Image (cartoon, rainbow, N blue to C red):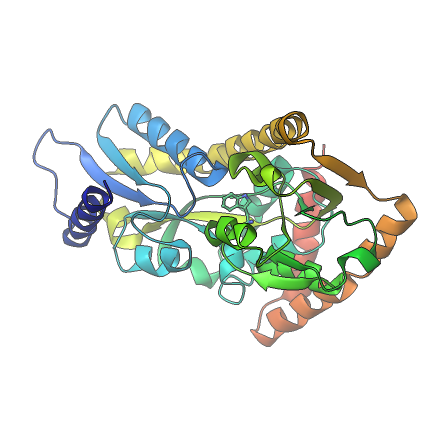
Length: 336
Ligand code: DTR
């Protein structure tokens, strides 16, 4: 099976590099790479996008999807798409925080409550500023997770409890964990199951749907509700691929950008609820809610993160304060 998959991946890669024009009447074939497993939300949204594009182009386009890092892995996603190893790729911006500084502003402590809110704010923010880190690709959509919470093998009820505990996160969410005193271990999501299994980390900090989708509830019996920080994602297409597409196909994809962001946000928000129910029922998950004065202490600690982002963005010549003010406006706009 592995050999067949590897052969398929190599074949797909060659097709993408050669950009073979389709014979008359043949569909335009595109490859779409993703890093996490097929049942997780980035891959679920990929299948939905594939189906919609195939349907709306009346079969003019055919998309072959590669979940689970079978074509490109988490950290190679952007460069792999730029170089044409895949036509399309889905990436988590947290894995290269410096590279995606503008859109990673979404992972600052902005008090985003839902994935729909985060996804729509991110999409508008991207379109307003069109940051240069995405200039080499065509951005098809963007979306975010629901807010991050701590899932752990030990109960965490206070800042004392979290001190020094090895917990997995990435990017902006990782900065949050550090300020709370955890021993932040940075790694892509796709490496987390093994790290948890081996006890390298005692938990993780992200949206709660992973309790069910990765079956983390089997090991993480506790969820501490912090509702802080989301992870931003982008779906990007190789620029040559985009330039060669017929206008009607381009229009279908352009029209789908915002809709896909919202669809993914909704899917994620609903999935978090299902995951919590599943984890409580099947694995006796205990949900820890911090008293308001305790939670305030946690949130107050996060102030330096925004300051640091402003400094870094300014150092890159970006209008940091204006950007942040606009992003905050968007976050407010999409709050229910
Ligand atoms: N932990 C973040 C975001 C994330 C949340 N759920 C999933 C599922 C599959 C992959 C990533 C994520 C991250 O690593 O990007």
